[in-house]
Amino acid sequence: MGRPPRRLPAARPPEHPLPAAEDALRALQQVLAPLVRLVLAAGLDYTRLAAELKPLFIEQARQELLRTGQGDTDSAISLLSGVHRKDVRTWRTNGLGGRIAQELSISSQIFARWVQDPLYRDRRRRPRALPRSGPAPSFDTLARSVTQDVHPYTALTELLRLGLVTVKTVKGQEIIVPHQEGFVPPAGSRDLLDLFGANLADHAAAAVGNLLGQPAQLEQSVFAEGVTAESVQALGELARKLWAQARSDMIAEATRRYAADQGRADATYRMRFGAYYWADDMAEGMPSDPARRQANGDNPHET
Image (tube, rainbow, N blue to C red; front, side, top):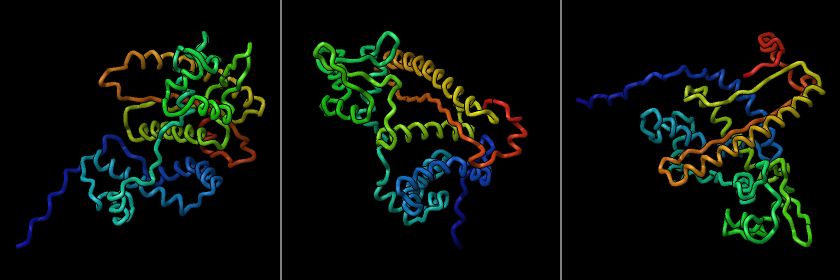
């Protein structure tokens, strides 16, 4: 007489309806198109990308199994992710060897402190021009408040290379003048890639969380079709003005709350607030979905 069959775990229906696979694929094609463009421009091909995606599928499958109260066995991970069991075993043995550390560069950290710390901001709450050396507030004290491992000269050289600061001489003293538009590294730089990854990852996390019924996060935009290039330029300038004010207000409040929360055991959360603006000529690209255009009436609307 054989063993009785193993008892099945109690199935819990999802709290919210989940997106259909075909619908999710259709949406992902839109999302992935510009990312594939980046991959190809960086000299990566499909084979390399697929290899790098394996540990991501495995890790996300493991987290989903744990989140739903299931065991994260090799078989369960393989079944959910579609990755072969031998690859799952290799991953479990060696860990996520391909994971890239999500650490901001020193230049990013210095500029962030420059923007956030009231000691280094002017009356308009913008990063102020600083003497290169001397007591606080100076660039040397700013750099050393971020790290003791990198000399201020090295940090300044990197910021100059990125075009994020200029050096002026006033009465024989070197003054470090920051880029007033904020930390906007040049195209193709490692710093811009760091910002790209962090911004898009959190934007995607908010959008996916909303799709899966998690606590609602702010993730909306304003969309318009059928406007001229002149209107697009004017709307872009308005977007930058609105962002500058919102950015300044958010930095001030985040700085105040950060100072108040220091030392608290529950101060374990992080946040990101952003905005973007994109415009293109529909006559030169993919045609719009006629059904969407009919539904929206080509009028500006919020999504």
